[in-house]
Length: 543
Image (cartoon, rainbow, N blue to C red; front, side):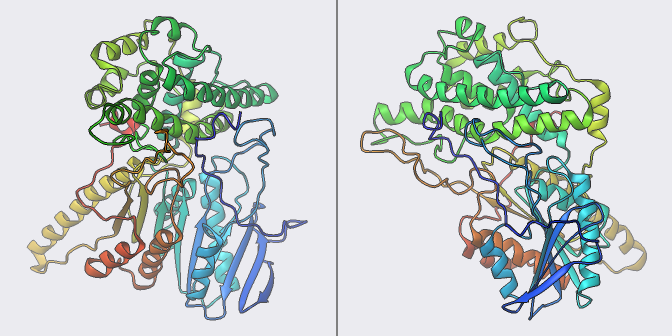
C-alpha cells in the first residue's frame, strides 16, 4: 500500500528528543545541567507536562517560548498506511528543529517548551502549561526581561490564545502555519473532505459519530486504511477514467464523468488548495503549445493536487474528528443544511474544464443534493456541539506585536486562517485610528496607533511540476515552497524568530526597508499587501 501511494507527500511530525523523565518532578524543582555554555533544565509543570528550558551563557534576557503542533492522541497500529506505528510520546519541544534552536541559543536567546499534559486537540491545556512554564522560567532565571511566544499549527493556535488571554505574560507572539479562530472551522473542512470521499468513493467510510470506547478507536483506524486505500485507487483512476470499485452508487450514477472531476469537486467543496507539493495546476509536460501540456494542466493537475492534499489532510481529519468527538461526547460535524452548489459556484467557473464541463458539474451537484438518499447528509449532536464550542477559541484581538507566517497552499491549516486574523486586526486597527482621531479633537495632538501585526506569506512558484523523460509527473522532488503543512526552511522560520524576538525586546515590529530586506533574504516569502487568501468555508459562510 505504501508503494501504491508513493507520490503522496505527507508531512512528518517534528519532535526534539529529550530523555524521558522516570518520575514527575515538582514544578518548582527542575533538574539542570550546563554543557558547552548552555544550561538545560528539565522538569514538569503541576499538571504533569514535561518541559525543557535552555539558556546560553550569553543570555540576552529574552525567552523564546515554543508551542508544538498537533500530536495524535492515540497510538496508530503498525499496519496503517503512511502513519502506522505512531506512538503517543509526551516529549517537550522547545523549537521547530535543532538548527533553529541552536541558532537562537547562539544569538543569546533562551528557549523553552512543554510537552503539554495531554496530546491531541489540547489548546486549553496548552495555554495553561505555557502560563505555568513562564513563571517557572522566570523563577529559575531571574535575569529574564522579555518573553516571545511562538508555535506551529496547533501550537500557533495556542500562541494566539496565550496572547489574547495573558498579554501581561508575553511581549510578542508569532503563530506559524496556524489554526486560528476555532476548532470548529478546521473540523468543518475535515468533515467536508471526509464526507465527500465517503459519498463519491467509498460509502463504508464512517468518518464521524464514532462509537464510544474500543469500537470507536477501531472505526477511526479502519477509516485511515479505507481513505488511503481509495486514494491509491484514485491514482490509477485519474489516468484510466474508471471509477474505483469501492465507489458504490456514485460510481454507477456518475460513470460518464471522469472520477478525477469528482475528486476535484471534493476538494473545492471543502476549500482545499488546488496546488499541492508537486502539482501547480498550471503546467504540463513538454511544450506549452501541445495538447498533452494543455490537457494535463487543465484536467489532470488540479485533481492530482487534491489527491496529494487529501493525503496530507486525511489523517489529521480522521484523528482530530475522533479526538474532538471524544472530548465533546458526540458528533460535531453537521452538513445537513450546507449549500454545496453555492459553495463551489465561483470555483466551478474557474475549473470548468477540470470538472468536465457544466453538465458534469450539474450532475455531481445533483448527486450531492440532500434529497438524494445515496448521499445522506450528517447531523451533529447539539450537546456535543455546545461542548466543542466551549473549547478554547480566539476573538482575533491583537494585544502584543504579532507576526504570522502562512503557506498559501497549506492543506491542513490553510492560509485562510492567517487571513481571518489579518481581517480581524484590520478592523481593530481602523477602530484604534478612529479613536485616535476622536482624541485629537480634545487634545489637538494626534497619536497614531502602533501597527502590531505583520502577515508573511510563503507563496508557491508560478510553475513547479516536474516531469520524467516519458512525460509522467515526477513526485520525487522536495515539496514546493508554499505547499504542504508547515513546510518552511530554517531561514524562513528564523526570520519569524528575528522579528518576534526583536519586537519582544523593543516593543515594536520592524517595518519599511529593514523588514523588507529581512524577508527578502530568507527567500520564498512575501509581504505582498495585495494578496488575500480565501477564508475557510466555515468563516465565509458566517459573513
